[in-house]
Length: 159
Image (tube, rainbow, N blue to C red; front, side):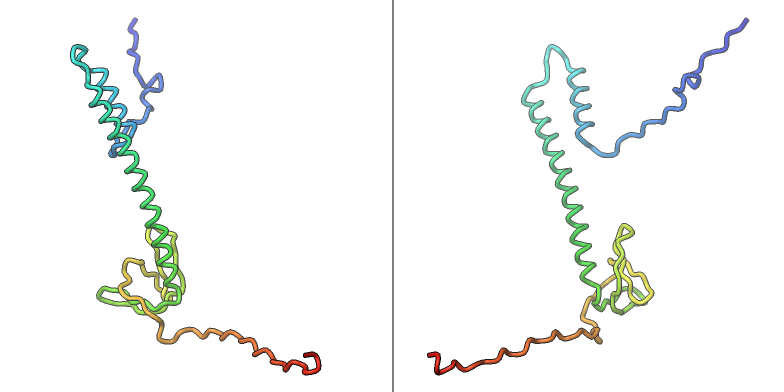
């Protein structure tokens, strides 16, 4: 009687997804390298504590730089949204072989980059080369001014 070999797929190991290598350096990778270095060091000449402190400081610096980069990305996105929103009602001109000139009527932030609407055309924000005041600005109702208050002469009998 022959016994069939046991395969890893019978125990669910074959369905495990392959681990993709990391493409970025982060704190987890740094700590893994540090632990591996400590585990494989020569016991007769251990790692210098100054080197370990230096590496830990480098980890902290890297984490702070990553946080700063993320904060700057958010700040850039907010500034870009403010700048694009300010284009509503402004006349723009695009670059390229077939430039488009018109008044921005809407702005969309649905995609990665903002898009402005001029007439029935969607124009990416990066294609705008000039911004100006429209030639025929939309009519704006002038505010109603308060009439000047009446001046009254003081009653000579009261004085």
